[in-house]
Length: 164
Ligand SMILES: [Zn+2]
Image (cartoon, rainbow, N blue to C red):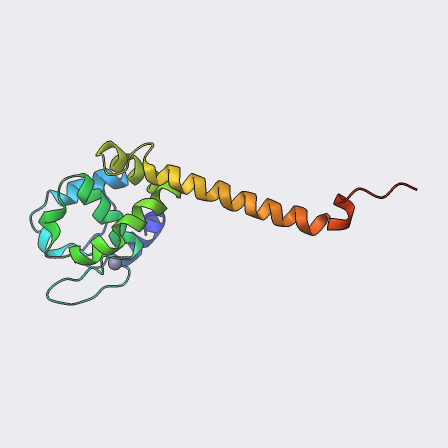
């Protein structure tokens, strides 16, 4: 909603209620950490794109907004405070994959969260997972290159022609 706030918020404002955007000077991580300090948010925070309503938990803990919020809260040392609004068991199921995906994401929000998670030590700067992934990518690239060479170059052309 942020980009259309200047247009949309005045239109949504009604008698006696004036809506306005705030916090434009904060980054996404800073905003999440500020919200994390509010006691009421620990019982009511709702960031989910696929809300659920199970045992008082409203955030699915697996959509991109939940994951981004959860990794920020975890890196900020606040995740346990939000166990009433997020399913931390579900988060643990997707956490590793999300961290791997985050290392390859190039959008500005993901880059900011990645930097914060790295600074907090959640993602090693040159960890094993990155090396293993790089090895897999190189191995797959070699296999694809080999297939291309095999298709382009028939076997007959690789064997020397008999001389007459
Ligand atoms: Zn969600």
